[in-house]
Amino acid sequence: MTRVFNFSAGPAALPEPVLRQAALEMLDWHGAGCGVMEMSHRGKEFTAIIEQAESDFRELLAIPANYRVLFLQGGATQQFAQIPMNLLDGRAADYLVTGTWSKKAFKEAEHLAGGLGGRVRLAGSTEADGFTRLLRANELDLDPQAAYVHLCTNETIHGVELGEAAYLPATSAPLVADMSSHILSRPVDVSRYGLIYAGAQKNIGPSGLVIVIVRDDLIGRANAVTPSVMDYKVMAENGSMLNTPPTYGIYIAGLVFQWLKAQGGLAAIEACNIKKANLLYEFIDASDFYENRVERGSRSRMNIPFLLRDETLNDPFLAGAKAAGLTQLKGHKLVGGMRASIYNAMSLDGVRALVDYMRDFAARHG
Ligand code: PMP
Image (tube, rainbow, N blue to C red; front, side, top):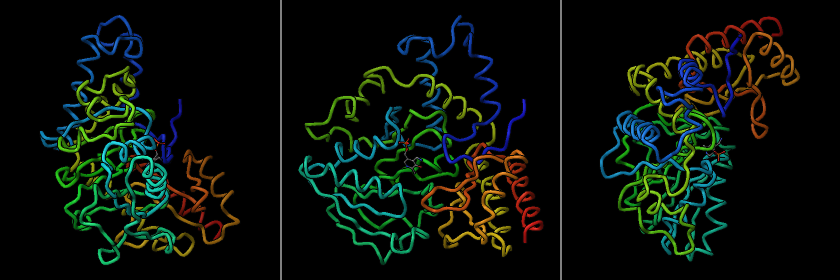
C-alpha cells in the first residue's frame, strides 16, 4: 500500500493512526461484536462514544460551560440556512464577505430573510479586490442592533484567514463564524463568539457531519417555520439525537480529537501548522516562478493557493506532482492555478516534499 501526500481541500487527508484504528475496530468495536456503523445510536456503546467525543472537543477548544455542542447533519451549507432560521429573530443581520464561502452564506440568508420577516445587510466585502485580503476595521458598516454578525474565519478557496483576535469586528452583536476549514488548527477564544460552526471534512472527520457550538442565550429563538430537526433548541434538548445522528462520522471525529490530544492539543498543532505554512509561503515568495496573491497579514495557514507565472505549465506541474505522490493540488476554478491544503493531518514532511518538488520543477522549466 502506498499512501500519497494528499493536499485535497476537503474531504481531506485524515491522520493515519486514526484510519488504522478505525480499520482495526471496523468489525468489532471494543468487544461489542459489531462495528460502530452497525450499532444503535441509543445503546450504551454509542452513548459512550458521543459523550467522549464531546468531552474531548470541549477540552481541546476550552469551550465554556454556557455553550452547547451539537453534532448535526447537512454540512456547513445547511448552517447557512439554519443560522438565519434560528437567529434572525425578525431583525437584521450583518454579513462580512471575504470569499466564496461567506458570500454563499450571505446569499442564502438573503434568500430566506424575507420569509423569516427579517433582513440581511452586506456589512463589508473584499470582492472588488478579488478576495485577496481581510476586511479592514474602517471598511465595516456594522449595525449595532444586528441580530448577529456573520463571518467566515478561513476562506478555503481564496486562502484568506482571520487569524488574530484583534481583527474581530467591534460589535456587541453575537459573532457567528464559519470555521469549517481551520477549526482545531489553532486555539480560539470561543467566548468571543455567539456561534461557531464547522463542516467536518477538513480537520475533523468524514463529510456529512457538522459541529455547531452555540451559546445558551442564542438557543430557543427559532422562527416558527423552522423544522424541528433544524431547531437548535430541539437538537440541544435531545443531545443531537432527535433523529439518528451521523454516528460513524461522530466516532471518527472522536478518534481525531484523541489524536489531537496525543499531539499535545491545539497549541502544539498550531506550532506545527505555523512551520508548515511558513515553509511553503517563504519558498513561494522567494521564487519568481510561483506566486501567491493574498495580502501577507491575511494569508491562510490551511489553504495556500499559488499560481505558476507561466500557466501553460499547469498541466505538466500537476502530472509531475502526481507521479511524485503529491495529489489534489489543482486550484479551485474560481482562482485557478494550484492550491495546497495543509490541514492538521498533513505532516511537515509532506510540505517539505511539495517544496522540493516545486523547486525541482522550477529548475527544470524556469
Ligand atoms: N464553508 C467553508 C469555509 C467551506 O470550506 C465549505 C466546504 N468546502 C463549506 C462551508 C460548505 O461545506 P459543506 O460542503 O459541508 O456544506
